[in-house]
View 1 (cartoon, rainbow, N blue to C red):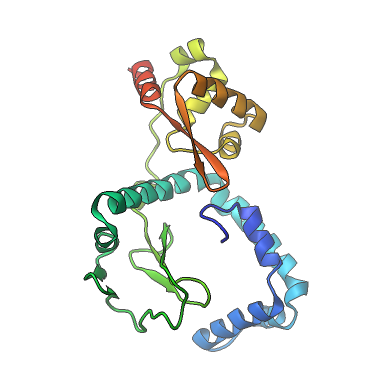
View 2 (cartoon, rainbow, N blue to C red; view 1 turned 45 degrees about the horizontal axis):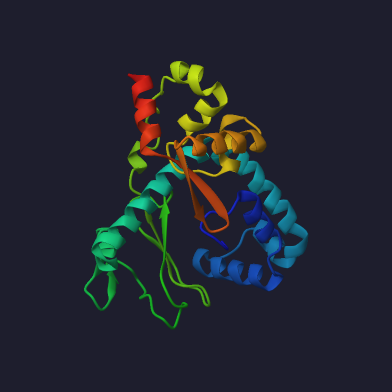
Length: 250
């Protein structure tokens, strides 16, 4: 991915534009691990440009049916993990962050060690840096990727995966809607985690322009703050908004 939170459409476009040599390289890597390729993968290897479009169509269908309905709550878990890790690093240093990441991972001040890994992570097999990727799909273990020129990648189970499917608490907003208006109250209630105008529009069913107007009014009233994250602007509830929602729900 080119950034921390690419859209599914952007990711599909990147797959569709993959170079034929890169596709064959990845499929050859898969064949070495699996022993052989099935007929569909052999066909893809023979004609990457012709079949990548079909592949991305299937990925889009899979996304819409399997992940899109639950993506807001999945992303909430991932974003909460990132904020927790960032705070650990800021308050206690990177070493503390790495030692807290997983029971099989340890940092002694000079080297990062991972138990039960068959091959070492070295600077000769990957680029510089270390990319940490919280995930809800790794199971209890870790996943690694080392491919030049990318930095070594370490995917780990995000904190809070066990709470992913717990019923969400419902905030009583009828009384607050009578004061702020239903659309503004709806947007405010959805901001359990910082989010963008586009994502809020997707979740609330309001138009992006309508969400933007609500956010402007809420920010002017001191109930919402704006924070730039790369190319996006994320909006978050302020302490005053939290107190207001809590009072309305009491």
